Length: 393
Image 1 (cartoon, rainbow, N blue to C red):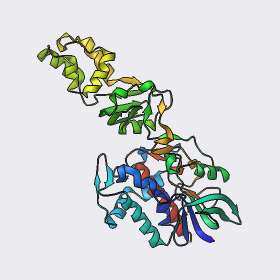
Image 2 (tube, rainbow, N blue to C red; image 1 turned 120 degrees about the vertical axis):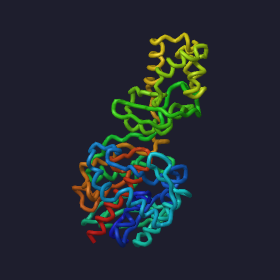
Image 3 (cartoon, one colour; image 1 turned 60 degrees about the vertical axis):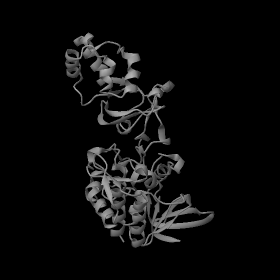
Image 4 (cartoon, rainbow, N blue to C red; image 1 turned 120 degrees about the horizontal axis):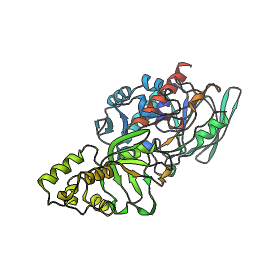
């Protein structure tokens, strides 16, 4: 069988590319259904983009590579597509847009766009071999137990990264990149919880509060969640993409509170009040109990010296913690790193050395913040590749 374009991966980027690549396009995926990451994202409601999407909120060895695709197919373009399909949505927080109903609406929308474009989809289909001959990419496939051979003028690799292996994620994109002479940058788990040894925060499991987490390279003001394994929540997931093993993170438990002023005022007006009681008005009670064993919070407010207030402020706003590691690809939302952008054309995502070979989505060394940014990269990079292929017909 011969097609114009073979797309590996029926995820967000792959389906988006198929919707724009023109006729005689085939998408294959080993899964039983397309868009499985879309289906489970956002608690089943899919955080499909972010209103504040901008290049600075993406990580890459080349901080300029993603600008072209993101500027030519923006969040507003995808929002318009969602609206045209009658999908109701809402902003949750910080520009994050979610479906009012189910994430499967986004999958159905992409499938409808693919159908309209004339793209075919083969599920339960595995790639068994790949080679290039006479300017064509020749793929040996196992289609639900049947052997198939497909040749294509264009090959689009949209197989994602290594995150969430239980859903079938692999490093296939990196293997294909290497096969065709492309470099792959260091890959690691991103948007992932931190772990600590010996159940350090087990007694705090389930406690959540607003906090500011930081490394020398980044700082995020969002919710912090204590778990039986360590730390999670949006602030942790965001920071994990900037953290390196062995590095301490700074935790400000009261980012919006002038603690010295509050404690001095309370010392003057409520001197007989317990310090733990006062802190429990600012922090979750279980967290105060946990800290009491480390910071000696047994005093009354009236007994606090200015020096002691300064010391408490430092501990509560500059808490230094060193994670043992992260939960890894098992729970990571994305893979940091990937196919080196130096080998790709930023306008159309095509290889600079192998005409007709494209890499898009999470497979590429472009990773966005938590909050819809990675889906937007999938839409933008898929659109860029698909549109370029159609224009070359």
